[in-house]
Length: 117
Image 1: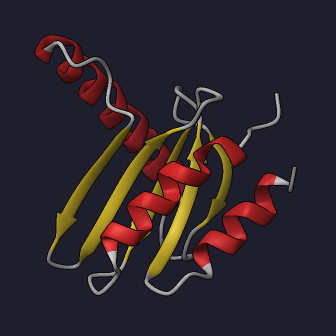
Image 2: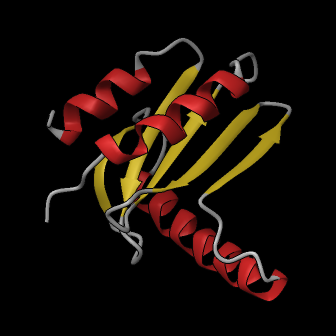
């Protein structure tokens, strides 16, 4: 298996990808490829909080926790993808990114994003 750093680096080299972070349930950064202007620790903490809130919403709806959640805005989109290891991948996409293709690839390759214990 490729090192996590290599997988994240390859992901952010895709057209339309602005950055990516793998984070723990506690909001700690496992690996990050973000613009230096972004606070990776703050983003990971907020993404973790959002993930817990979305899991609670899924439970209340009877669908179970979300595996993949997308927020699309005028300035771009962000995707939270739950990984098989229990970590979460956050991907930031530009407004012109092909989200359909990106969502498919993220879900398809999620098992390859194993996070070392």
